[in-house]
Image 1 (cartoon, rainbow, N blue to C red):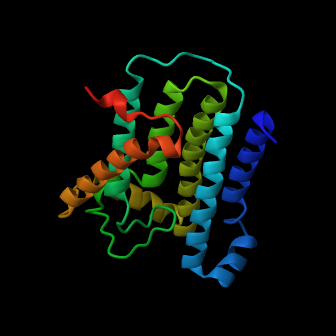
Image 2: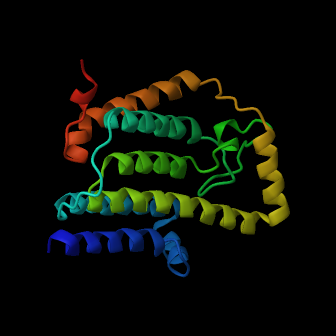
Image 3: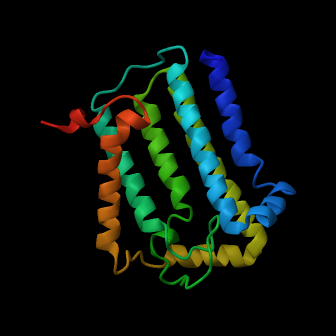
Amino acid sequence: MSGWWEYAAAWTAFLMSHALPVRPPLRPRLDAWLGPRGFLVGYSVLSLAVLGWLVVAAGRAPVVVLWPEPPGAGWIVLAAVAAAAAVIAFGLGRPNPLSFGGTAGAFDPDDPGPVGRIRHPVLAALLLWSLAHMAVNGQLAHALLFGGFALFAASGWRMLDRRRRRTMGAPAWEAMVARTRAAPVRLGPQAWLRGLLAAGAVAGLLLAHPWIAGPAVLQRFLP
C-alpha cells in the first residue's frame, strides 16, 4: 500500500487513535486497566507512533504542487517553532484547571502565569507550528497534513473549552476565564530555565529535522 491509499489510511488511524480512546465507554475501561498515568503514557506513545506514520505517508504521497515556497520560508517556520516552543515551555508544568489533564492544585486565578492567556498550551503550539509549515509547504499532501493539524488544534481548543465549561458549570468557568484574563502575566521564578529549555528544544529540532521529517534545514540559517 502506497501513495494516496497509505496517506488516507494513516489519516484514518490518526483520527481514530485520538477520538476513540478518550470516549466512553472505552476511556473508563482503559483507566481501570492501565491506571490514569498508564493511560496517558499509552495514549501519548500511540499518538506519536501514528503521527510518525502520517508524516512518512505524506512524504510518500504523489507530488502535486499548489503554491511555491515563499521567500524567507525557513525564517517563517523558525519564528513559529520558537514561539511554539516558548508556549510549551512556559505553559506546561503549571496548575491549569482549564485544560485537558490540568489540575487545580496550587492554581491561583489572580496569578495564573501564561495559561491565563493561553488555556491550552499544547494546542496553541500545534496551531503555530502547523500554520507556519502549511504556508511554506505547498504540496497537496503536506498542505492537507498541516492544514489538518491546524484544524485539529482549533477544533480541539473549542472542544476542551466546552468540556471544561460543562464539568465546571458555565458560571464558574466563565468567571474563572474572565479572572485569569484580567490577571497580569508573570513568567515565574524559573523563567530562565524554561527559556533555556525552549531554546534547547528549537536547537534539537533543527539538528534532528533530517531524521524526523526528511529534509535538512539547519544550513538555511548558517552564514
